[in-house]
Image (cartoon, rainbow, N blue to C red; front, side, top):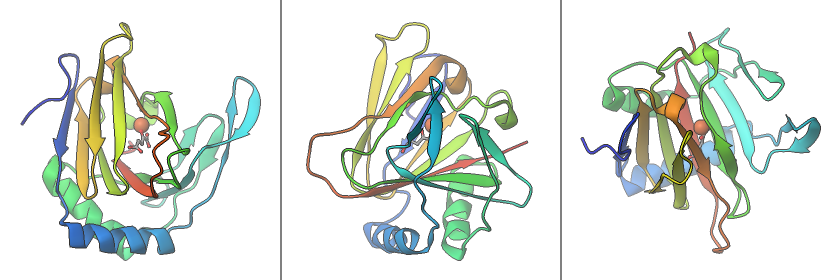
Length: 192
Ligand SMILES: O=C(O)CCC(=O)C(=O)O
Ligand SMILES: [Fe+2]
């Protein structure tokens, strides 16, 4: 497996975990069936709306907190469970929750962060599935921020992050000026 990171973590891309036909179908089903919401977050003491829509699905009782909000998981849908089992087979581990992101166009984005909430444990494995418009996903080293890597997340791809990635690398999904359509992302996680 080809590691996209030069050191201090592991990130592996499966460019076509799902066929284009499967991916088209899942994009439509997720767009229609997921309870998408634009949520506020507290950033430097100010409440602002996130530049994307989100949803949180998972096993009962696996709550999720970040930036001052706690989310109760919604019940898995049939298509989420089908996608989850393929991701589990590729990742070699199971997941009990998923954060979903809907980027309406190139102006929606996610800023630099690490998925290092204590509820995820020390070296979490995160499986990140993409459907819809291709977007660039960036990594930068937390201690040496000029060290960067970028990867194109294509329709039907899976990016797995593991090892010490969440200690040493931040990641982001920057805005793009290109006129592009919507992208759906699912990050599968295992809450302890
Ligand atoms: O949309 C993406 O690919 C990134 C999502 C992400 O980093 C997250 O949900 O924590
Ligand atoms: Fe993340």
